[in-house]
Image (cartoon, rainbow, N blue to C red; front, top):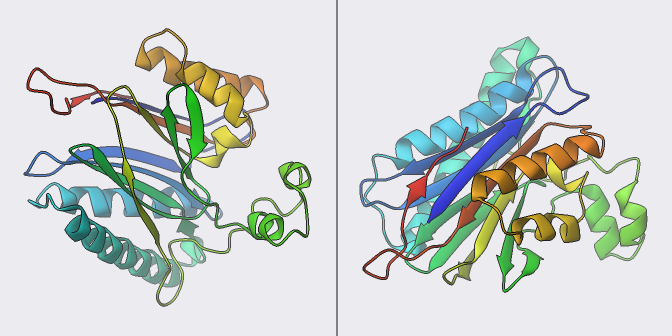
Length: 256
């Protein structure tokens, strides 16, 4: 697989509270993570960094290759980082109430395990079509699902940024998990809402399906989100599934 990622502060924020990382375990299994922190001062930065570093660094020491085992491991680790973030926020008044979203993708052969909490998203681009794979854990999305507001109304709703699930809260958290079948030449996109609040799925899909290098696609997505307003931090992690000489998935990682 080919991987490119970038994170950008945007045009309106003074600091970047997003964190992104790609980690490989002892069995060669790739785990990609995007987290979007929330909280005043430096709290959001801290929360997203704790989540990504805490999960990613431990992942590198594992030998897991079975998707069901990875799913259980990832669920436990996200819960552990939830507890760490909550405890840290209670210890430090400047960090009180901090939290983060998380979207994680692990790749085994021709399948992907997704786990997420919050409104950072995962997309699949297959056969030139883009499909959102995650369900936003937001108040506005719940209002859309219950029919109280339309999708169009949700785009500019004043409570759009209110989450109903996040990492960094007391007690047990609910983590969505799913396994997706993949094919050669598919693209997987993980991103923070700084991208999806600025660009439509159609626009995102057009850039990903364009004839340009992977790095340029990531750069273009961030540039276009900034041109559209750049009201939040923007993180884009784009993966293309490729074939190596033996017919398996090739890992060719980069990013900045």
